[in-house]
Image 1 (cartoon, one colour):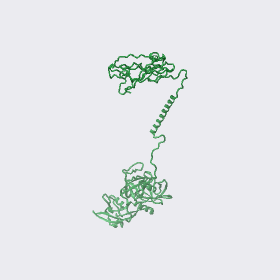
Image 2: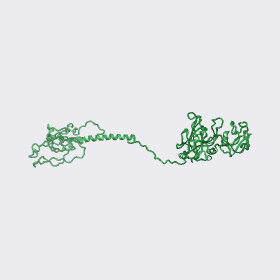
Image 3: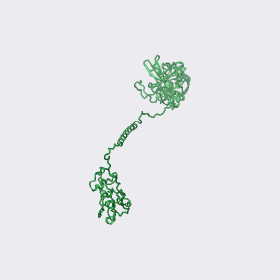
Image 4: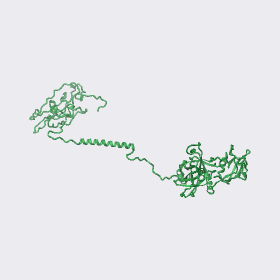
Length: 564
C-alpha cells in the first residue's frame, strides 16, 4: 500500500521510455539440430519468458549460465549448454549517454525474475515449446526485447490452442498463476469429482458461531441489566444476638417495657387512653388521676400488658391534688414490677427514656434529658371550682410526650422510675379528632417519683392520700411578687387557721411569703407546689415581708385529707 502518493495508473518500469539507444539486431534463433547433430528436427529453442515487475534494487546477481548440450532420451546429446561466464556490463556509458540511466529507469535488466518451471501441458492443449537459451550480452548491447505479458483479463481462463507465433511460443503463460497453467477439474473420460464438504462445513461453522454469538450477547446484556440470571439477592448484614448495652436506649427499653401497661377507660359517656406501670407482684399499677377519672364509680378499666395480654382492673384510690391513682389487676401471673429511683438524685442533663401509648400507640419509646427540676406547674381545673387542680413540683424533660403518655414511667439510665409523665406544654389549644389536644413541642413534665411513691403507698394502704399544709388561706388574685396571706377565709373566717402550723409560727393575715427554704416563690401556686413537694411533719423555713420589713420563721407542716 502506498501512503501519501497519487493513486493514478502508473506505467510499468519496462514500458517507461529510457534514453535513446541504437537497437541491436536480435540474435537468430537456432534449433537444437543446428547445435547438436542428430537432434529431433521439431525441437525448437524457446526464448526466455517475459520478466515480472522489477525487484527492489540490490547487488547484481551472479554470473548467468548459457545452456549446454542436454543428453537426449537415447543418450545422444540434446540441447547445447554453455559453461558459466561472467556477464558483460549491462549498459555502455558511451552508448547510453546517461550514466544514471540504469534499471529500473532504463531497459530490462538482470533484476527480472527467472521464469517458473515448465510443467507438462494437460491433454487437449497445445504443447509448450521449451525455453530457448538467452544469447550472451556484449558490451554496449542492450537486452533483446521480450514478448509482452498476457493481459490480466486473460488470467484464469482455460487455455486455448495457440493461434499465432506469440501464443504458440508462450502458450498463454501467466507469471502470477500456478505453474503449468490452469488444470481442468476433470480429464477426458474421467467421472466428475465429488463435491468437497469443506464449504458446507465452513457455512455450518459460521452459522453456529453467529447463533452462539447472538445467544451469548443476549445473556450478557441480561446479566448486565439484572446482575444475574437467577433471582435477585441483596447483600445484608448477618443477624446478631440482639444484645445491647444496658445503659443504651435499647437496653433501657428492653428492661422497662415488660413492666409498662396501656389503660383503656370508659364510663359516663366518656373514654380515654393512658399508660401505667406495675408497682408490685400483687398487681398494683400506678397511673394519673385524669386517666382513670372518666370511669367514675361504675366505669370499666382494661389493662393491656406489653406482651399483648389483657385483664380487667379495679380502682384502689386516687387523688386529684397530686393527679395520681392506683388500680389493681387480679389473677395475672408473671408481672414485672419496675424498680423505683430517687428523684432527689436527678441532675439537669441526665438522660431519660419515656415509655407510653401516645394516641393509643402502645409500647412507644422516646428519649431525651432532664431539662429542669422543680418546675411549679398546675394541671386540671376543668371543673371550675379548683377541686381538680393539681400542683406539681415537676421534672421537665424534652423527651417527646403526647396524649396517651400520661401515667407512664420516665426512667433513668438504669431503667429505674424517676417520674410519672403527667403534662405537656402545648403551643396552641389544638383541634381535631384528639379532643383538641395538640402534640409535644419538647416541653414535658413528670411528677417526681419521691412524691409519687408516698402518694401510692397511702392510696394502697389507706385508700386516700394526705396533703402537707401550713394552715393559711392565700390571696390567689395577688399580682405582686410572692404569695400573700389573705385577709379572711372563704366563709368569712380568719385566713390563718387557729392552732395551725402558721399560727404557731407567728404568721399573720397580709404577710407576703417570698422564699421557702431559701428558694424564691413568685405566686400562690408556686407556694402550694413547694409545700406539696414535702411530707406532713417536715420543717420548713419561710421568708416573709410584713409592713415592708423582711423576717424569717420556721414551722412544721401539718396534714390534711386529700380529695379523691
